Image 1 (tube, helix red, strand yellow):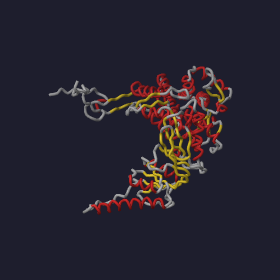
Image 2 (cartoon, rainbow, N blue to C red):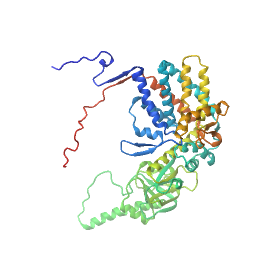
Image 3 (cartoon, rainbow, N blue to C red):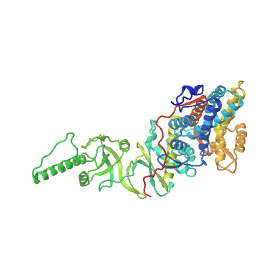
Image 4 (cartoon, rainbow, N blue to C red):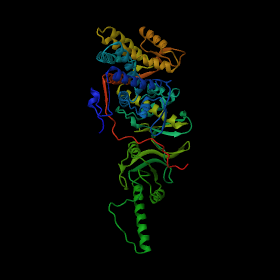
Amino acid sequence: MALHVPKPPGFSQMLKDGAKHFSGLEEAVFRNIRACKELSQTTRTAYGPNGMNKMVINHLEKLFVTNDAATILRELEVQHPAAKMIVMASHMQEQEVGDGTNFVLVFAGALLELAEELLRMGLSVSEVIDGYEKACKKALEILPDCVCSSAKNLHDLNEVTSFIRTAVMSKQYGNEDFLANLIAQACVSIYPESGNFNVDSVRVCKILGCGVTASTVLHGMVFKKEAEGDVTSVKDAKIAVFSCPFDCMVTETKGTVLINNAQELMNFSKGEEDMMEAQVKAIKEAGANVVVTGGKVADMALHYANKYKLMVVRLNTKWDLRRLCKTVGAVALPKMMAPTPDEMGHCDNVYLTEVGDTQVVVFKHEKEDGAISTVVIRGSTDNLMDDIERAVDDGVNTFKVLVRDKRLVPGAGATEIELAKQITSFGESCPGLDQYAIKKFAEAFEVFPRALAENSGVKGNELISKLYSAHHDGNKNIGFDIEGDGPAVKDVLEAGILDPYLVKHWGIRLATNAAITVLRVDQIIMARPAGGPKPPQGNKDFDDDD
């Protein structure tokens, strides 16, 4: 009979074998803070224009070389439950404003790091949380006073370029002027008077070769495809779009045809050919001169398309088909039939061209008020083009945020130091113990100029003291001069380094909420993972011949 070993009394007595349980400050709170601190220190070195790149290899062994925090977190697949909360907050920031994910991570990590100091000093968790909540509320009240300018006309190319430049600079330092101008062209050309802007309307097509400065913007769509038939260029195109294969229709019911002699076989094949020709001829007579299909193109159908001078393009995904329909104003037809004039799309120019050594089909609008524009990115490696695509994505999201709220605040650490200065003085006016937490909240803002300085190889403490002295003199817009020698400062409003108001607003809110959620946890109870025992990791190649 097996010996029954009694469990020690306490909480673990109630749980199944294999369950884990941590409680109290040392085991639960500090452990969680440590995990979040590690995560934020990973991305802190990637903050700002001089941020270092991370080389991430995901579970599919795909290589990412980037300093974009959203991509790093998405591919890391963080497992720690407390660190996951901060990752969720940064994902929320990505969905809400599309930029500032690293801001959330770094700020939440700084808040938790300083909370640990307060807890070790003897403050209770509830006092720290109370102080943080008050300070967050105060920060969001002060933030509108930091606004230094606002976007006046989002249809003005030069103005939009200057606003997008800061977002692009943090990803592609050195190419920011060129890329910001490209993104601004793409956004302004499709920004309607009604004011509804869709991020999905700016497409990206990456073509290997040449250099970044060879990238261009096209009003319309670009597909890395070859035209199927002989016709490779059509002016003033009338486009018929089919979501089915470009082939003769297959009947719904199955039937058997009995053929007795060769003549009947010839007649049967001829009938099929005549039917195919009639369908293609009907499409041509409806006025169409370009056919786009979402399925395969039959040889016989292609033969008749060439005969009637129809250009045939095949697209692989239904998403591309839908976007093309939106671009040219067509309706995707579910079966091969002649389209009505309302169902056909129109495009000024459809042509096959070669970019580098890649064949592409271009659907181009001459007028600049199309529904979709495409940024054609050139680059020497796939990783470089992926990183430029992320910079384009940030730039487009910045434009979308400015459509929602035109206010801008100074960048380069100016806003953060101004908030730190005002929240510190607010903390000194508070009577209770939560004043310590409010002051620490203010101190957490110093992490941004410090990160910018340290990533640029400058002493952070010197820079922060210079910034504070400038802000105490009433210069709200003084920030870190990344191009100066040593810890130099400059007026960032004149330099055009501006961040959208909403990025900071949501970043502060989400980071504070995430930090408070982590601090509220005082027990971690983990059930035993599901699944049976793991197979033994013995000699895997035991059956291979030597």
